[in-house]
Every structure is written in C-alpha cells, then in structure tokens.
Length: 155
Length: 173
Image (cartoon, rainbow over all chains, first blue to last red):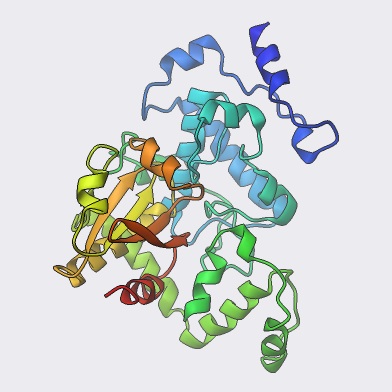
C-alpha cells in the first residue's frame, strides 16, 4: 500500500524513541473527505476527550485552571486527527504538517510529554504548575461550549 | 518577575540550575521536581499570591469580548506593515487551535493600546501565513517577536505574563 511506503521512508532510526509504534497516522479516505477546515468529527472529538482524561489520570497531571484552554487544544487535536490522521500538537508551527504527523515526534502525547511531562500546549499540567486546575475531567459539552463559534479561524 | 516567564518558556529552558537551589533551601522547600526554574517561579508566585493566576484567567475571558487593538498581518503585507515600519513592531504568532495563544492575545491588544503611536502590534495566524512563520523559524506557539528597523530584535516563547512583554518592549522604546 502507498501509505506504508511513505511511512517507512520517514521512519526514524530503529532504536530511537521516535521509532515507538505510532500507528494509523493516515486518515481513511472517508474521514479525510469530511474533514473540512474547522469542522471536527464528533467521534474524533470524543476520542480525544477521553484520551485526555485518561492520560491526565495516568500521568497525574491536571487540566488548566481555565478549561477553555483545554477545550481549544482538545478540539485542535481532534481536528488534526481528522485532517492528518494523527493528533499533531496544535501549538506548533510546522513546515509540513503531514510529514510531521507521519514522523510522530509531536503527535499527542508528544515525546517531551512522555519523557518529561512537558506540555507547552498546557493540556497536561504537573501538580506544581501555577496554572493547573483541580480537574482531570472535561465534558463533551464543555468543549463544545468553549469552542462555539470557532470555525478554525480565531478572530 | 522576570523568572515568572520561565515556566511557560518552552522546554529547553527547563534545566536544573544550581543557582536556584539555595533559593529553594531558604524557603525551606524540598526539591521535588527536576525543573528548578519552575521551583524558583513558584516561590515568586507564592509571594505575589493568587493574583497572577486571577489576572491571567481574566485575560483569557477578556478575549471573548474581542477588543482587537492589534490587527492582523499576513504573508502579503508583512513587509509593508512590519519591515518598513518607522516604529518598533510587536508580532504575536498564533494558531487557531492553540490554547495558550488565547491567553496572550488580549495582552497584545492591551499593549497595542498602551503603546499607541510608539509601537504597533499585529497578530499573525501561522496557518494562514506559513511563509513568514517559516522564514522566522517559528516552532512553538504562541511566540512573540519584536522588530525594529526591519530587523528581528527579540523572541519570547510561550504564554508569558504581560510584565515580561513590557520589559522586552521597553528596551526598544
């Protein structure tokens, strides 16, 4: 399949942390077709919401005291999952998003988060962080409410 | 207050620093985390209390009111608005789905008003203007850059407090 060839070409050196399996980086054709700018598939959003809750619990990290920051990031991750096939960090600029999604370093949870619990997107904050809230939970409704009116372009 | 920035400034700044250790001991705190910069900022924050938290929290919600004092700039008009500007220019590089960008945007708007006439501030959407973002090596977002006489003078990475941006700006006033 074409996909696997492309993936192999961009695979990092074996043994590097980057070679950790990061499967399904390419979206299926049908998902891609529906992923218009700023439109997020509700299934992807729910998936990223659940992932964020579970990962926060597992790593003993907390969401930002301002949950709208959390909501925007989760929606951004879902948007990337739809358009790129992987939840690429929405708080970075990339020369080539597709290549980055395949490479995987900045796919959530990114390598700095997995290695040192560093999330510059402020999605997962360590207990000593001054901006962390008390929550490790965020509801689907909270996300929708905080990101209502955002169509991929922040005015 | 400068070291307040430390915790938000991207990962590479977060290294164990020997200098921070005595500070932590003075406060009678045990080093629990590997990032001493963060510890140091904690101590400072403890002194200033919850105030900083509140301030930032308010700033986030303030963005919803959409006071857009700092207008947009893009790949096309970057030269005209920024490089050819007679006064220093502050650029806020942001992306639509970046959470911390929402914290810094209202601060940039405030600065645009406070420094009106002496400095201009713009916001650049890195998704819409990838050329400028790539040319200036933008990686982590939000990033704020200060330009003077067409030259990049400063780069501030992360959702930093207003005081940090003011300090940086003042150098070029």
